Length: 122
Image (cartoon, rainbow, N blue to C red; front, side, top):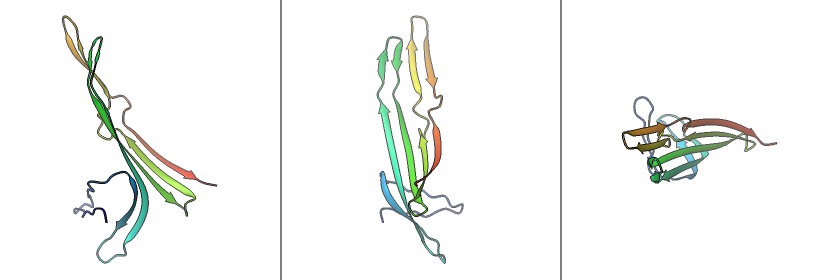
């Protein structure tokens, strides 16, 4: 076992220190049969350092993306789930400095995207 966790009264739990890779997830409850499922998890991080521009400075930005894939129907199908920019931190942010004013520009348009998919293999 890599890690384990207990849920609270509402069924919520947290798993920490998990890297991208293939895992077997085992769910158990006292008095019930355990259930084991194989899933693939990918966690990706991106960081762009701040940079100077002719108008001022583009601030740093970062993103954490998550992808999960589960084979179904005896490996003839796949369910996929992905979530980009989980913490909504990848938007473009700039500090614009001119002679008589300073402005902070923030654009978070469509940085967070959730995708759910299913594939059938013939």
